[in-house]
Length: 234
Image 1 (cartoon, rainbow, N blue to C red):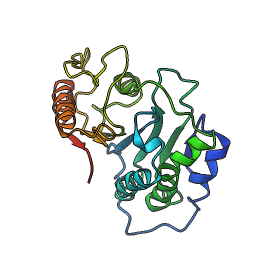
Image 2 (cartoon, rainbow, N blue to C red; image 1 turned 45 degrees about the horizontal axis):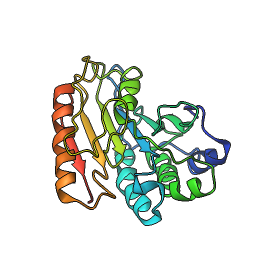
Image 3 (cartoon, one colour; image 1 turned 90 degrees about the horizontal axis):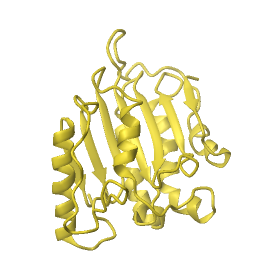
Image 4 (tube, rainbow, N blue to C red; image 1 turned 180 degrees about the horizontal axis):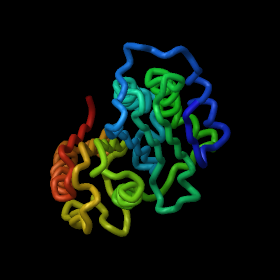
């Protein structure tokens, strides 16, 4: 099976692998033609304590329901990268999954496992298998991933499961007058989309949600993303 999973806690491994059985090729599944760049979907799971997905089971299930179809719709040879973030500390963010979708690792099977994983985040935190964190390093996470994926080589989509409240050395967006620094490089140029699911969740303020949406939309445009979507709920 074409799969690379690294730094994934053994307790979580079965959630994905156990629901991705080998099987016969589905001839109806679209395939990226040889020689064409395969799409990449980067999914970032914000494990900071401010993100309701870390503690609210119902909300985590709703996020999982939203994300799973994104994977199901991908063609064979597409790549899904799942990473956790929060504190700027690699030892705290051990959830890392890389999956190339194939006839033996079908999009629908991997999507089912990923849905189980995301919906189970609150329980995994309660059980100590994932660690809730005290910071929200969204920009550092994006900067790190910009070194890993190449938006100039093919379609790359970033989907962040976060409240969007940057809390790092770059900015503290909970403050009404805080702004994000302008991108200092062009590595996001050509990226297809930046999407934030859960923007403003937990703050209970429509004005704050709109401020966060405007802030991230402006940053995404400066960075070179083709589009930005920021959803409080759906």
